[in-house]
Length: 104
Image (cartoon, rainbow, N blue to C red; front, side, top):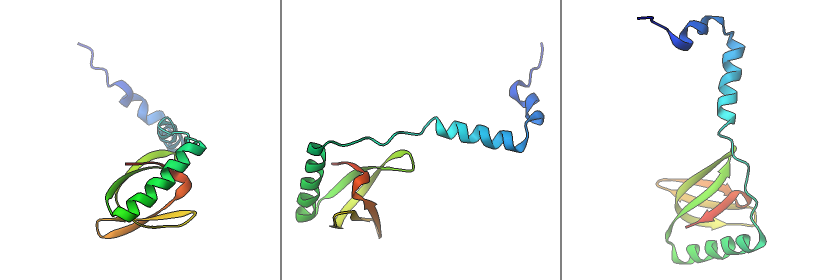
């Protein structure tokens, strides 16, 4: 039986720069382009933010950051035209309003 080491046999031939570039390429495959919300969706988000602040209910916010779509659970404490302040457990997090994609 032939014992093939697969890709391990080629590891010695890669330079550090090659490995670094391959890792960057691997990460870039997961990159997501920022979705563009239309006027109706923006209106809905604005309305939902106001409702949630009045009721004080916990929400799940879907937002875009660093070429990824992320989710955050917490209470909305305050918001302005550009940012929203969310309390998550014992800390607070500030999100840019234009990066918010959905609120549930």
